[in-house]
Length: 422
Image (cartoon, rainbow, N blue to C red):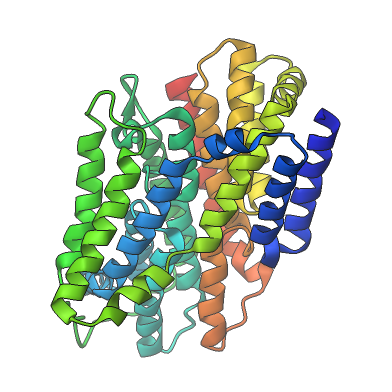
């Protein structure tokens, strides 16, 4: 049974890499086979699915769509640009702002919010928008690891470790992953300042974006505030965070229906939820449950522990930089979902707390996608926007920004994590 589970798992990964457009279908078929072959019983398969994580992702996606439609992000971008002296500082501040937004909003959504602002600036100055759009994309990827709702990988970590919203800020009396990411953001901002050192053209905005509906902004803040409040409630129900995110999305839909009195206004936000990601995760939870049931996770954990010669620093280093390499070429969601139980198993074998290794996995896998244009969905979305504007970005051109940005940010995070959590 173990050999069958390993074979099916490897075939699934190969097909996801070979035909990425159909990876959701591949994973769902594989999960079904795991159940049909009895590798994991149907009841255990349902239990393996983290419904709280699914609800958090789906609900947050819906609230974010309403937030984008309100045009509040564009207004915030305008306010930043009004206070910057030239294009160099405008790009850096837009990148930092992109990171701030991305700590609470999906990375792709963040790029879709701010790319039009950067395009507008560059058109006025008659310069190429390629560097600024890339800077926005890589910055949004970096900050996805900062909070519970920042990225799917963070939600997966929270589901696996039972972290609450505040645990991403302070945990066991120590600075947690949020501050590590901020340190990486500051050092990588210096990289952007150096890369854009010659872009000193002055700029100004002729017309500020008008926001007519502030309710979605309050809704998004409400999600964050309620998640923080829930984190202080002991013995709360397991689906609490999921119900908060889905519940506030429903509040937003009902309010849209009442105000606009048109049933069609609630259809678009529901359609905009990324059901492919939700189904992909559902299938992955079952597959990982299957290989765990078969003992594969335990075997892989023991193998990696032996490979690292039972040395914590060696294993931590391997996890961080191997995650960077892998995430440069494949989707970090299936990788992180697979590696979380493996990392937990390694920590158990070494008889150490797992949090250093968990955080190392998150930093490497989340930031590693910035090495290449195909390493993260936000990068792909950014290049798609540029393609529509008539700009073709080569891999070399992307990596000229992505590689130094990533290496500096990951190195900062790697060193700070070891200093804080070793």
